[in-house]
Image (cartoon, rainbow, N blue to C red; front, top):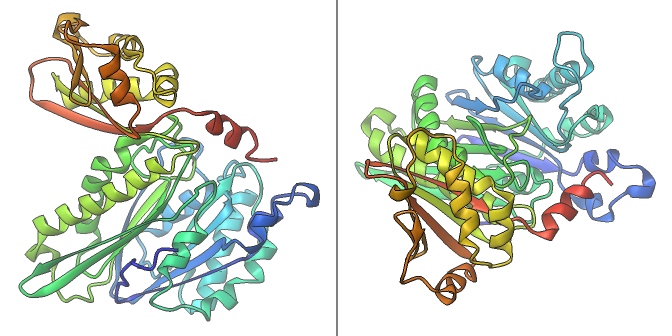
Length: 410
């Protein structure tokens, strides 16, 4: 557990083992390791706190996503988060059990905290297609509400994990007129990772004073530079969500530190995003695909994602095989207009492999192999002379990725 996560004044939290993960398995398939795992959390805020959030754009969004969207414009006072069950594919139309259960969880939290149910945002992650084991919530939420303290965020970081191997946490500070602003964030995610307007699950907290619209703008900018630039397997989850809550406890208004706050938030969320990639399911490599010179940022991203999602490229990365033809082929099939082979240069680290669409005459297999042996690899692709530049961070594709996902429900 990471104890370097800085507390945010105005934020309290608690986590408990509610047996949610155990409830999803038959006794024959019960994983003994789940018996002690934290899987239910509550985070509460002082009344002055404002909260912004972004959510998955997957059409089959989960019931808690629907409820959280509906509650976001209320005066948010609490988050309730469970792992082990996504409450997705369980019905999001009025009267359906999945939606009903999500609302009921909010009611339980509201009753325990003496607030309104509309002031609670629910989040779930885990297996899709199974109803929430409501008995686990009924038996633990009231108890959890009595355990809230200001230094329990590390427990929440642990409780939100599913196939993750480690917690993802980050804290950063900057000073404004002698006053310290603190931002702390946690995240979870290891597989089913290609966020679209959000991330798997991430919760960020700060003591700056800001309106919801100001926070929403900051969050959108930071998300686009971090969580929307990572991919493990190209799959966008049904449950992706990222929230940003500001307590105002520092006494510093965001309008007095707009640039500093945005830069610090960007850096913190990029750190969390990179931690997700480094803990990608079965990952042995952390890979940046940087594309330069496209006619637009969209063109650069299209090329970057085409390379990052190529199973042939990803398996070559796992094998530390400098099979540059796979990278070249992926670039060539990218869906962008006016891509010319003679404009393409490709680098592994500082080693140029392809020059003007052909094998660089100075390249040797030994140079390429030395780069591919590294655990942190940068693939740079130049596709033109324009100023646009975009980077995407990804992983290799290993035997363990297949094993983890083949055995996920067993």
